[in-house]
Length: 57
Image (cartoon, rainbow, N blue to C red; front, side):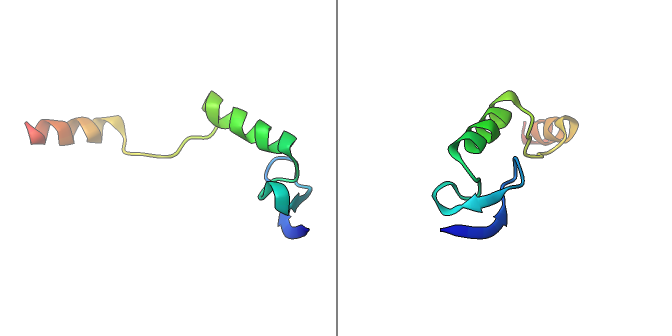
C-alpha cells in the first residue's frame, strides 16, 4: 500500500511498510544522519542553562 507522502530522504513516494520512508535503505540513511549529529533537536542555549543552574544553588 502506498501513501500520499514523500520520503524525506529521496523524495520518492513513501511505502506503508517503511513509513515515512520509501524503503529500508532510506530508513537507515536517516538513522545514520541522526547518529552523526546531522539532525539536532533544538534546546536551550548553554548560557541560559548555566544561569538556571546558578539560580538553583
